Length: 250
Image: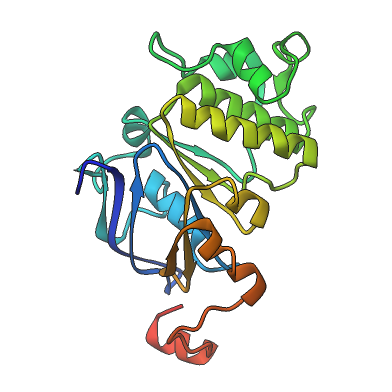
């Protein structure tokens, strides 16, 4: 793995419920860049994020994933997080009884990124209004998504995976998230955006189009965004559900 690569996914195959979701997938994530992974529903985008993070049910894969030249295969989700990998969920979690301030500060250290108030301001939330709010159902999905991103800004992870960052939020919140992505890059973090959105794709430097669990196109954003007009990329996949079940592929 060369020095510009922070994460290398090498021939990873993963099956769930007897169906192959990731199919000999290979791609490299460059240090300090913003990358996007796009593709149709069911292509394996969110599965890829969960596999990199090592979530339960996503650890029995063939091939390997290397972070800073170290295999992640035997590492738990906590161990991966301690090495500097963070995941912002498509649907942020709720934490009954936990204040926003406590939630954001939980991952901070002396060498962290932004402070609590700085992080809240960076995602467009007033610290005086939100600091003592509970991270629960009294917050909207968009508010929880921004608070989760504030917590990531405070941790300054080396690699951030953001799964559908535009899901369930309005345009004002989305613009704040785009600003936060730029802040993460300035802080030195590498960002991977899992998305089906052209607007989110355009925040990236480089992109991958995946279909049926493998990369079918990669390159500049201008090259990859043609997918949104074409909607289908010529490949050798046969869209036959009966054949998929028989052969164990997708």
